[in-house]
Length: 273
Image: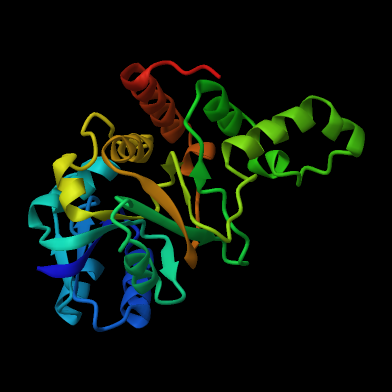
């Protein structure tokens, strides 16, 4: 049994995957026994099997079709033989020994899953922790550009006091901007770009809910983790996340996002506000 397993689901983003793997191997303490699984949802990408050939810690898996985000991670589930398992996006870059910090943090048996601080390339903290999802909050984040919700839209003080100011305050509440990010705290929902879960718990939950192909499967997993154990924000390390937010740019992905939202609220109840 290894201390840590890591799964990265690839989809025509071989360069990102290579960079993510390189950053893991460069920054993770060699004393941590680990196995990295690359699940190739995009068909055989010649760059990815080469990683498995170059590094003994890497194993390449090809399901032969696109299983979606959750399905891709579930494809690695039968292979896992570890104490802790990391769910990692290809666009994550480690800049320090994040796994040592997170595994030390998870010595606390109350913690079933942990999420580190995620930052953009310029070092700004991303709003990756959220309160329980509501229809209003999700529609707000989908309908209003992030730069406006975060106060970068150039609106004057008068606008900020009106409806726009109210929207920004609601978004700040939903994204837990009122919390002290220098300290740990429990989280209802953390974005699935970088999560570390106890492997036994992940297996007990059956991995991601297979009813989601893309989007909302991370929110669903977080909710089920919090029913069995607890999800916590870990302030002791950070990683860089490129965060493309594809559904804001692509109509097909936007439709997939809306369909997954409907599936999520049908399962958990229609929390409108």
